[in-house]
Amino acid sequence: MAEGDVAEGSRFQVLVLNEIAPRGLARLPTARYFAGKGVPAPDAVLVRSADMHAMDIPASVRAIARAGAGTNNIPVAAMSARGVPVFNAPGANANAVKELVLAGMLMAARKLPGALRFVAGELGELRGDLDKAVEQGKSAFNGFELAGQTLGIVGLGKVGCLVADAAIKLGMDVLGYDPDITVDAAWSLPSQVRRAGSVSEVLRNGQFVTLHVPLVDATRHLVNAENIGLMPRGAVLLNFSRQGVVSDEAALVALETGALGCYVCDFPSAALLRNERVICLPHLGASTREAEENCAVMVADQLRDFLENGNIANAVNFPSVGMARESAFRVAIANANVPNMLGQISTAMAQAGLNIHNMVNKSRGDMAYTLVDVDSGVRESLLAELAAIEGVLSVRYLPGPRRDQ
Picture (cartoon, rainbow, N blue to C red):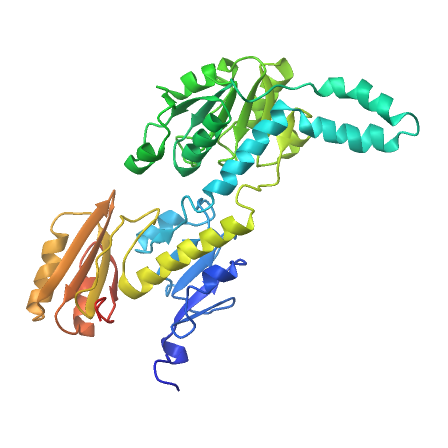
């Protein structure tokens, strides 16, 4: 074995459930990682759309990384109970989604789906005067321009901010609402965006309304039978977030009554496909080469830093915790966020004769996470003692080089 190689059994084993962009997999060097299908006892799982809810997830799994933003296909609560972080890639596909939102607005405003059907259907079968048929038929597809229209945005994360910026550059007036906007998002939001005080205010004032929120209990049927009628008559509703954020039934009723002019979404259903004023796309939001590569690279880097150093970034169920290595001996502990946990951890290490060189502890809801660098090696007996503390969910020993070496 060449110097610097790692024996097969000592490599991190990563189970890959979907096709992952090669650029992402390349971030996991083969000297330290084996990534592929059919791994019997994986240290981690890389996934895109595969449904893991019915999967028997091995006890060996220490992390799950989703090469995308949503994690509805992963049993996050069950993983939290095991002390397993679930990583995602927020913002990595934001530009792809932004461009599709713009395409959706243009398709609706200029009636492009109907025009394409006209050309492929009536004109394609025509045996007479084509120029005359074009002139007679095109009046059915008179549309309107985006400039001067009001775009309402619900959800001002990375995608929402990019859509707002692009819409302003197209000459649109933008109204935004997000009760949980982050500091980073607020900094990147164009100053021209007017702030709305509620979803209802956005619906009431937007000729176009686009939704960019996760699907959780609070956002399920965010647009529904009670509020969809607030939209200006003939308005366009766009949903590129998640299926379920809009009530399909409410959208169809609003289309039938004319209260809604067009519904554009990325989530086809049998009911929606039968309505010509619905523009359904086959879940194309992140389906670009660039987005898939960005997501794969982002989660692979996050996964590697966690497996090797215990650092956590962009986990949907854990706090963000990062600590540069100042020692070759590190312990990572996930535990319930309850009193005296740090005291018990520190006491156990002191009794084992270990000097704590550096420590960081963060919490998020019911979950807490601690990284501890000590000045000497850690015995298995201490790891077992830490794991036995009531409320501790997982313990990992991460010996490795210092970052300054």
